[in-house]
Image (cartoon, rainbow, N blue to C red; front, side):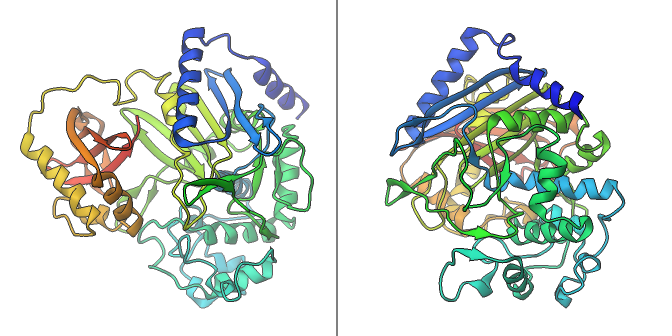
Length: 476
């Protein structure tokens, strides 16, 4: 284990020899420009390319009241980026024979409700259990308003009373409740408290001295303050709730420590390489369709590059491009508070990656002549239908089921001041056997949308019949 710690230290100090000053300056300019536009007070960025740390830098301030600058050892609340630690802990127990992925969770939690009898550990890991999504979870705790402290027993009681949205395995639905239940399984199978298990199995052996499980009573050195937007004004985020078992989003860390963690994880020093490959495989649903989420990670690809990532509501994000041997980590202190002004702190890891991986970004490409103006108009009409909450026949049913009121609201806002929607290019993917929500994809067409506030790039996954199997947008 001492050798493993030394390897992590060597990685940390091997700074920047592979990065040209031109690339570094380009990234600095990009980050500072985006921070100003998105009103991000401070962030840390780390880039690891081919096993070498080419960038590890703080920008802006960690605390606006005290003008404390962000540094590489600044500690941020990771929120849902923490899910990878919970998922990895489960897989450590799977390797030890103490947990079975396809075992019903009631085998580990016999006091659970009868409604959970069809849910397995795998369903929890992949958010396919049917347990409720954000805003609909732990409903029994809502009367009386938010409390400062929640015990594991209180959370379990509330989770047991939550209504399932669908049969296990039928579809994907992001659920913090599911990862809370995974924390309980970790404690049951290991005989250790969740926070102690992570400390003893991960943080201490790897020398991650700035990483811990959330404890609001504890004084943490170099901790960043958290901010959000309320009525378009920058304010303190007031995330002070203490959960005894915060296994859905309760890890705090620094980019220094996360570099160490990602290096150990991908080198097979935390779980076996075959186990990590399993975690980075898209889930297969009951109907045979796949969804781009694995165990604690979003599992996707962009323009021929595998992309493994996860974000957190506090303004954090980690992206792995394993085939390009590239890791990008951004930890910021501008997060979202549900019901308040929408913030836009995410996507920076993808933008930084695009400045290392040629052809990843659509934005820099020269727009090609539009080969099918009729298709472009139909795609534009689909966005308009989504903005009105209407069904769009061009959209495959499996994709349509994932549209939410949030999807409608965001699309409507972007179209409200639309200036132009123009074709950029199409990627022919017929040779890559690409599938999206069960539909075979033939090409991905990219469009530039300009409105009064921003320029965005919309990508449409199209079947051979011209139906839309998926839609994605970014600022790059």
